[in-house]
Image (cartoon, rainbow over all chains, first blue to last red; front, side, top):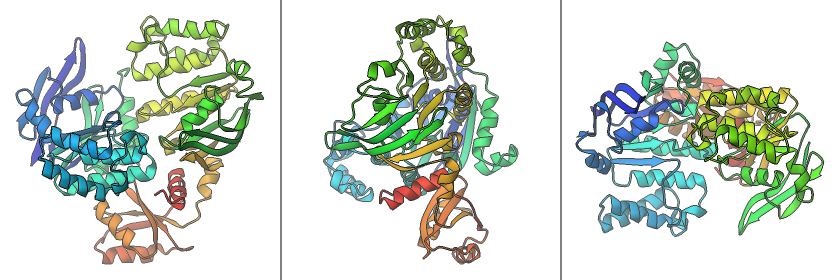
Length: 244
Length: 304
């Protein structure tokens, strides 16, 4: 069952076509890798799919809601985390969880239960009352992910969630992703680590605002006769002319 | 070119750098490989005279980083991780500014930056703040080079940069190295280690290893196998349950399995996986990469 359906989605800024009539679908429970060079249009596309930016043309339905007419319902149904912004650094771990739970309208009792379960799962009980700024990046990112799925979203959008994270934590982060996907959450993720592209069920590669390739990592490697996703990516993205 | 003895730097209770010592030779391309928060930026800021260490000392091009900081600043180029040019000045104005404060001109050193600056010259009237990420990076590198430094410090120049631009950036560094420049660069991307003459693996303020990439890889002490089968997540669980498993990590389309014993038997492992329901499992011995070594060192230190 498709949970994201995109048809001819386009966004122009003046004369510049940032996203150029892209079409694809994402199935429920899928881990979908959304790749592209810097400036290829990923962020613009993601902002449209998360209800933050109105398209110029085309259609998209996210979790059953239309991106033109129901962006607020989309925002309520999805989770989002990025490398740049995720948690409030001046709030403690517990406060951040309560804050995000509150924003998504969870009952106080539910927030309490979820806080307990989440802290136990991440082995963060000892750090519950520490401010985020004092935590190592890896812990923060795992926590940010768990907070992004606190309200049981249908889809979670992850924008370069593992940038700069150490290699062991990066893999633990992907364990969390697999766990959520196994529980039925759809994962829509961007990354510059090409080994992580291999962890996705399917991968799309954007070049100059278009989706130039979309398939499973295995099929893409076969199509482009490349030993790794890095080679597939470099081959496709080198064809891009857009100065990012 | 660089000698560092027992550098330590603390911020309150946090030890950002813990007794770090190393040397970098003239003309070397030397890399610090480690995640965010490992201490790379603190180390760089000390070496470029912007931060004073609590303990230890460091010399760059024969000059003491604290006592001789003024003389040293003329000899080094520094590109910080965060974009630090004047966003309200144009591309050309930024470059002229940096040339002027170092008492030189763009013309005098144009040959050194030509290769890089050439690519942004069509936009020289544009304000630096309006440049794309890749162009900002090229301008910052041009500004760091304009006074013809003897040593160049680049703090995470490729963070957040896509795989193609990263490759192009390293090609640029290779050409600068060929012009005789000593280059010290930091990166969180383990795969970039191979592009350096020597690397230091850094984590939690400590150096885990310093050597050529090949020697670091050769120093992986345990037997390593690459394992491939469908359903990666279930495969990870099955391998971790294998009695001889030391570590199991995902690596692209394969998993890397390290055996706790001195010798391993790939066929026995394959048999085990077949009985666990992975009929198509493929197992082959491989040589370790930098990332394998890095994770093993982390695990040995009890940080995994």
